[in-house]
Length: 285
Ligand SMILES: Nc1ncnc2c1ncn2[C@@H]1O[C@H](COP(=O)(O)OP(=O)(O)OP(=O)(O)O)[C@@H](O)[C@H]1O
Ligand SMILES: [Mg+2]
Image (cartoon, rainbow, N blue to C red; front, side, top):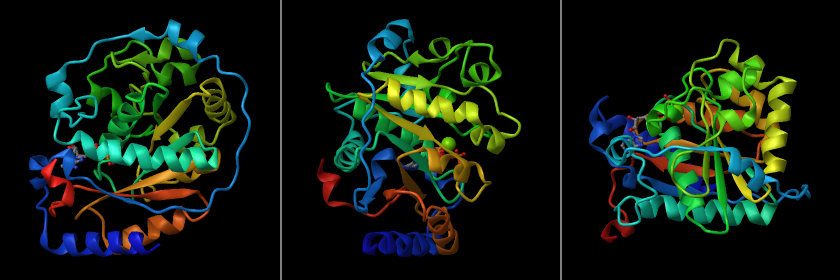
């Protein structure tokens, strides 16, 4: 907990003397500082054999615009990019902890909006997919303000919306954005009744299917802020673990503590302190 406390204190200090509303746009994803708090391993469930190869063969492949990606701070696929190290460090910490605990589904949330959840979720998923023995599936579960498709520049005719409405099967909604071993389940439109939907049997079955079908995959769920509504609380019992992204100067100490309280029953694997401006030892790289 010591590191989490440090992160909270740092966020509090940053709040008072940092960041005008627009100053974050000059930041860089490489500014992310990473704090992983290890909890004790809890469970390890066996899963059926992987059918991922069959599913993957049906998945549409689209190419992405490198300029668009960089503008949206999606950089983990560029090994020469000065920011990608941060996501690789995060990846390795996350994978070690997930492997040791038998976890394969990871939710990403934050106390407040605009903390960098989506940026972290996308880059972490890509960084995981860079490892040749891994695959990553990123699901946009921010059903009120979905933004994964926009960040990646995806414009697919079918998405999670259509799957949930019964107008598409899963294979039609999945897309491979031109990066090997990286698959996305985008959400194209905001959904009414997001919390109830996330608590529904249909979404429960979807999460279970994704976890079991892709047994060689890490499934990452990009969620809304935990304090924004009860959406996160609806999903948490259905995922293995959660990572909280705290934007430096974005959330107050009270908000961070309240968010931690709401996550108290979940396997909180750590906190990512994002948008941090202080120099790090890794700055050289
Ligand atoms: N490390 C960073 N440095 C500077 N800006 C960043 C950083 N990470 C994210 N941003 C910017 O902050 C804004 C919010 O990022 P992002 O959409 O990832 O946050 P979010 O927590 O998912 O927001 P929301 O709550 O709306 O879903 C974006 O403009 C993004 O480019
Ligand atoms: Mg987001």
